Image (cartoon, rainbow, N blue to C red):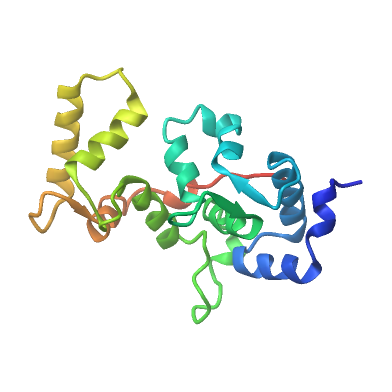
Length: 194
């Protein structure tokens, strides 16, 4: 028997989430049950609920990742919103690479994964990554293992290499260019709840 929450996901909702995220119904149902246990049966998840996830609690970017689940100004997320964000991390299957080009771009496409990653760095949401933002994220990632001087040097070098328009910041286009040879589809994929 599933948890109390599993009976609350209607077939039409399940089908809509499947269409939106590309996830299989069994994965959605398993994730729904897990979400219900995470939120202790509540239909909305809070930041505190997410901070109890061990993988996020130990991740230096855990708070940034958690923030990505919540719409601007919101402190709670429903299951559907949770699944939409989680879908960015779904691996791209071989049969998805030839999907209908006229349909909406899947949430787990290379472009959407790059937008998601860019937003983790763009702390002030001004569509560019400044030196200060890059430094903040680098500090989150390395903690006190590297001196401020070394971090500053890394940030300066990164911006110098990526900045093509001379504004001393990294735009999304520049971010994409820097990552063009990186297998983002693989690096930003996790297999969850099989």
